Length: 362
Image (tube, rainbow, N blue to C red):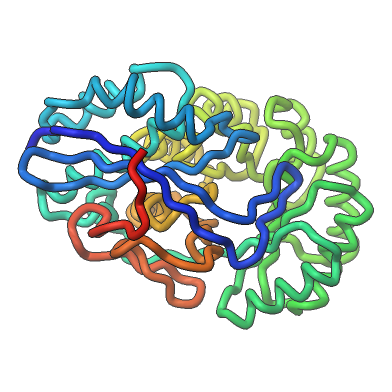
């Protein structure tokens, strides 16, 4: 099975409600879908959203990197040479992790098809379904409380609450959500770099003293501020998770060496695909640190790929893979399915995706 052709298209999927964080607002998910076609007619699927405020990647830059720089280096290669192909993807250019991730997952999809193996089994087969949280966007406290109640009614037991716009208001937001969902629902906070280190320590301690029972706080400080992240981790009882600080294997090695966080959020769009993400997870596991499998606003293509790695490896102790469930429609045929707060992995080879409706080739 040799790579014959690479194509890129776009799908636009309205969200059920606007997705709002300390960094951005999204009303419609516009995702690039990659097709890597083999000479036997097989098609591998990949996916990349534009997340310029986090990865720096736009639709235009991702498409250009795939079609003109990285993709041509893959055409003609045998899919059996998976490691060489993955190395070619990573070495073709610096940065551009979303483009690399889309091609990487498509190559893994083809590899799974080549050997008739679902990807979650290829990555270890630890389980065939994973539990996810659901994100509550940053809004007025009453709105967030209502959104959290709806999430619980839909079957979610873990709520990820977006904060980071204003410390005093953030406390009221979390307080309102806790009052709305009761004591038995897990609340995770994501500040998206919105706080200063001392502010984060003060706020988290206040929440601890108030008995708000926060499971973890994700990326409380600026991505570059490793020392500030360590300061927060060292001075609160609540677990602190690195996200935007943890892009590459080198980033994670530094974070672990500094003991700057308690958990690592692994995302395919940051790492550059399943191959690098698996290495990051292995590094964290060797240090005795658990991982969350996270996502950007990927369609079900990207979410299926992320869920496959998470389901395969026991180091992934938490999941934030709700993006496809935030979308008002699902153009992806095959892949994972949602059962309340669980993602069920397909048993078809590779990603188990058979098509994408509304895909418009660029």
